Length: 266
Image (cartoon, rainbow, N blue to C red; front, side, top):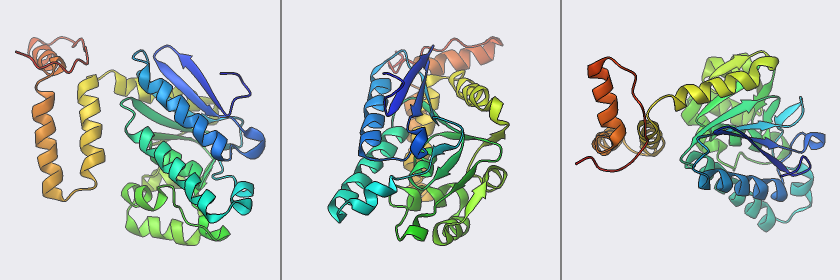
């Protein structure tokens, strides 16, 4: 991919940086950007050498200011719905990529831009950035997953306030309410995002994958169903080489060597 592509795909060892690349439009999300993001995520998913993806925005002003308002204003309702369905496919792809996915929020994360970040496993924000769902202020709704994910991240009451008033919060407040995991000085953002990704990667790939699956699927279940899913996935992880290696290493007081293999142990 070239520097002029809507999404820049940059490999740094086993970590891929995906950069939303419309800085002149605050990385607004139109059909071309979303389709490019889908293609980049599919490329990362196919490549066994890629273990983590970090999503960020080009420039210093915005991670993404959300949907392309000019497109929305000119489009008919069917086209708006199609854009939203594509965006939902993107967020679903982020959540089910099978890789570690971290959002490095370098500037405004608003509307659809925040919805992309909400789908990631972990969110790191630069100090001073602002986040929010201002959709109601332009006569729209957070229809790309915000009404679903935000309450799960910050609770129903805080989500209702953000979604219904359209008010933004700064990075420190976002961390306080659980919307972002870390806030760092801007010059440390890339390093911190990669540090967190590699901290996750230092653990068993099989255990990380199944833990995320238990969390992601379990949120849509009753408490009892979610707990039973956890028990079933505990049994599934026990059939991996990583489980044997991790428990053996613990008993032998040594560091484990992970394979991430799913094979059943005889």
